[in-house]
Length: 338
Image 1 (cartoon, rainbow, N blue to C red):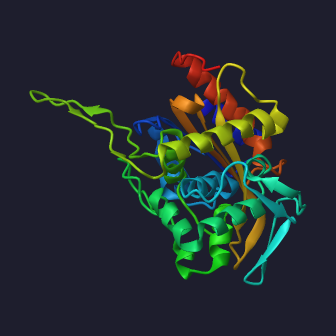
Image 2 (image 1 turned 180 degrees about the vertical axis):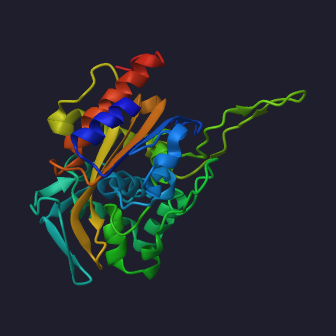
């Protein structure tokens, strides 16, 4: 994981990079790595305290389009949309006087919800949110645990920020449907999308498997699992949609794995401006996925802050993600499901 992350961090000249691998069935953290990093033997030599921060739990980010499957899951769970539900995409929307566009500003005409995920259409995410309704949509994001700390046994964890949704205005829910205006930690987000991989359960991430005591029984960590983020059939439906994203759309379908079903989604989000309201022209790239899709053993989230030389996360993170997943499936001897 460290080697793969190093390569991406250097290649794309990012300000920060991170990756976390979890067992979505139990919450066990398998790997967690970040760049820049430091040598614990010589931590006193570091000039910047920022390098000691764990960005998976101590930073919140607006993650962008990786949020769209959560929006879609809420719609499917309520029976408001299905993969074949269609809407007319004009390429933009005006809500509360604000203009929302697709990433390329182009309209596709009449398209279905599968196309919304395949082509990452902001207007489609807003359509799904409108079918759900502002109140129920907010409830689902809270139900996915995005405003909570995960409870992992590491210092400095912060909670996500969904405060924008409390306004009750449609514009805030519209931007949240495609991952802007709400900020979450990468680990809380990974826990949320793990619910898409495991039948709708919310797990508590943990890194300590057991504590050994002299003369007393070992303290073994029991997975903490909360049922009911979404129904099991919703989890399966969204997984089917995300497998199609990989097989048909991700880098033109060139990354389809003939031996394993893999579910994944990319996200490219503008970073908020530091000098005032609005957004800068710098980006956060994110990528999440899980495999084998219908009996997931691993879920991964990866992110690059301010990568240079590529506009979209599909260009920067598809290869590192696939390389990591291929290694995991091989190393743990997971049988092929295709």
